[in-house]
Length: 280
Image 1 (spheres, rainbow, N blue to C red):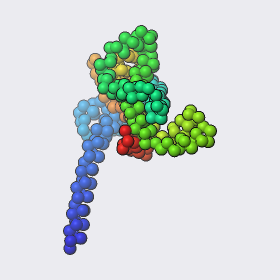
Image 2 (cartoon, rainbow, N blue to C red; image 1 turned 180 degrees about the vertical axis):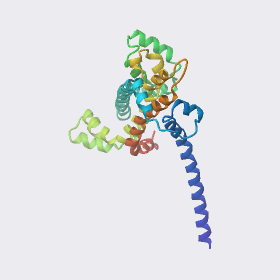
Image 3 (spheres, one colour; image 1 turned 90 degrees about the horizontal axis):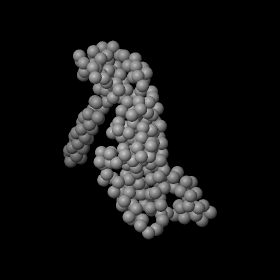
Image 4 (cartoon, rainbow, N blue to C red; image 1 turned 30 degrees about the vertical axis):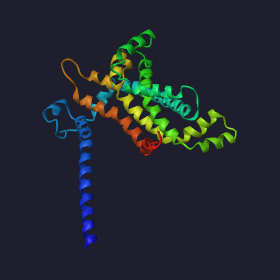
């Protein structure tokens, strides 16, 4: 009787958790679902019944969005995001490894100075960065976006990777040294391959932030042919009207790369976030 009562209590608790999680999933998916169905409507259908299913599925909205310049914005975003993420992860991994494995004067000061970058808001740095990029003659180029993106992503990624490397067993590296490896060989052939979880986490977090970044893209780029997707999508509206159907199709296309990256690397994501959570 007592066991039966416990079982029914357990089942009731499981049902409540299941209902709560189902509601959470619905709340998360609802905006995405609305954008997808809106991308298949005509403009008139979008305004007359914004919450209903489309009367006719208009896949040509995706073709229209692509031909209206999205292909160029997409390419620009891929170039800027790929180079920025690669530089961020490589520099952060090298810096974190040096901070955790070597003893030198000023190590803590360097680490806390890098960490202080987390306190700097991009909005506050906008004007000095604008002047600096102009003085360096790289305003309105890919570098005008890549350098600030790398600079603002480094503090968090260094913080993340340092915590991971602190939990990394030194015995593996010591065995490699005994086999004749030098520091560079140990880093590139031992440490980096074993650090896939934290590298994947850094790639996901940095890619999402850089791919969707709007402010720097708006201020540091004037040339339409160099615009990234978030800024380029604003060209879908004019003073007289906005093509919402094509705009929604553009938003769906823009979201696809991030979804693909997350699906490919998600098995490492949680491991990377929890690794090194004890030591810090």
